[in-house]
Length: 420
Image (cartoon, rainbow, N blue to C red; front, side, top):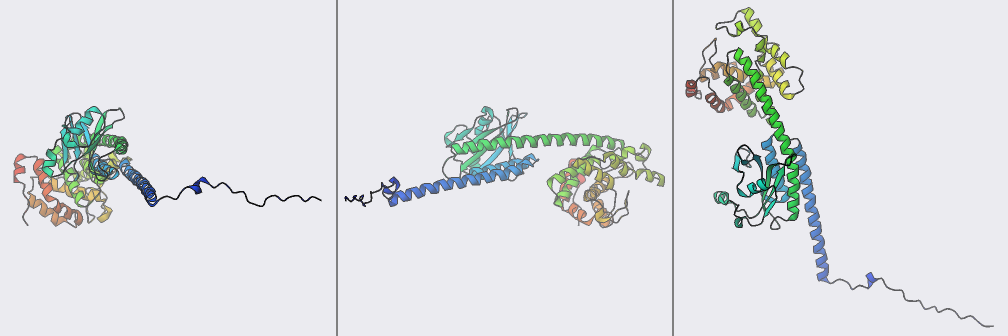
């Protein structure tokens, strides 16, 4: 019997993976791969940082209504996102054919001709400019560098467009901190920032325009009442400024201070309901006449009540409570201490100070020293001591406003700080 031969037990060699067949990388190749990966990770982290900054600043800018503050925030955003040494956001002023902005302190305004410089070129053309060596560009003005000692190397400038596609401003960053000049990615990023900034700037400008119209309406309405009372429009300006100075010394928020400044002209609007014979009486009022006069805070509150607008709400509060006294002896509700709204406590000091230093039909004007003495004497009875203390701290500013808006030019020359 034939025996079947066994198949060969020898294993057939398998084809090795091409990956395993590759020679191991040399040390220099491994170093190169690691360096490449590190660069990619660094770029990824940089974009993550930029996106985080964009989100952070975007949320802040969306709720900001003060244009000056917004410009400073946007400039800070551009510096952070683009790793630039400096940044400025210019706004187009068509009326004066200028570009203007705020310096970093927020207290000074920069103004340059609309058709001058690199920023002007972008504003006129509507096109982005990336200047890598500004001293070789004839549009660059080196005077600022000479004055400040700063050295501008490169400038990236992008236009900001309105919803109607008009250039409303210019976004400019100077000197990239790392990596040499601004590149294409920086150009794309600044273009994105400019698009976002445009919407925020337009919103802030619209808000300011509405505030301006509101302020003018309030002043005109209040002036009509003051005309009936034979006081001057300058009185409205003075008390508004005094109240704002005091509130600022007491560290209230900017928007709250601005609302108070605009609300102050309405404090006596209720006098429109008081008979002319009482308002114009040159002598002392009778008890019956005082009853009528003391109705004007309620009249004012009635006129201004039931509004959802924060400014009108504050105006109603000031009108109703500005004759209340710290010790509860005021009118119309005889409330006392901190039960009196703080805006009304500030209004009381501002109004009484101006009333005493101004000539009225029923009295001569008091000197500054006499008036300050009365406020100090009434501190803790008529007036909130904290408000009086704030008044003293800003008295030099108040005196400047007294001089600027004096009813009598001769009075302005005589205004001096009281002696201690």
